[in-house]
Length: 306
Image 1 (cartoon, rainbow, N blue to C red):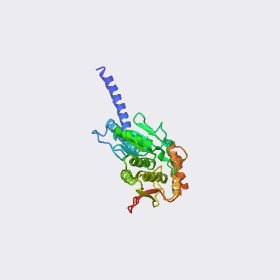
Image 2 (cartoon, helix red, strand yellow):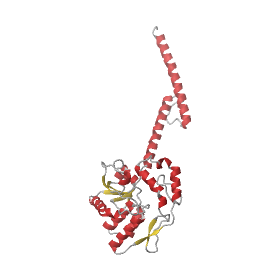
Image 3 (cartoon, helix red, strand yellow):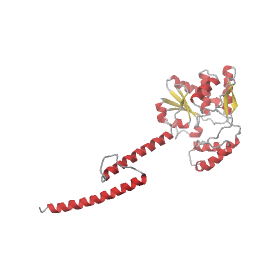
Image 4 (cartoon, rainbow, N blue to C red):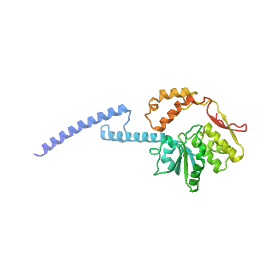
């Protein structure tokens, strides 16, 4: 009996201290749940089971963080468009979507914009085989000078039973021009046939005026006549290259949007590729306001999107 009373006193003091800690934990958990609008109870347990509540809160937070990570990753992913079984087209974002590219079986990447995105931070030589070109997206660029070498690369990949992604920065002008040239030079398509095939799977395709002229000359050379003509489109909404939002019909409205909504970006605090895109947009006032050019069929059927 002599040892029982001291032991009981120690146990009683320990239980009292444990109850105090338990009450503190419970109050903190309730406060945290109220502040963050969490509901407890998907684990069975009494109202006083703070261990269960704390564990439930931990699990819920982990689930939320996992979902945020998945959403963030999805926002930085672009699926390229399949032109043929072995040929894909896309932008710089598609070229960085490594899991998507591997899922599609893409093994080679033909990059047309190393002058904008560089190679060290934007390419994955351990995963893909690269062929790099630096072509500026302006009307004076002689993109035809790389047609044969680029088409040879695509042919090589295709004959090996593998797949290749052709990309520029936006996946709109340079990559579209090269894919059209490939279909004409190696698949014997007319420009009209190539355009219809490409536009069906990659609707944002839009070679600039200078590239369009080169493609028309190639069409004439290969087939003895031009299968389509390029006509001026109706004024199109200016799209912000940073956020993708409509910025108005004029170049000045786009410039104002960039200065107001993306002031930090335009000050040079982002990577070189994005900075170049901003500078391109800011110099849009020097470009004719007549709108972009799109191809239309020489016959009465219009290929201009509404």
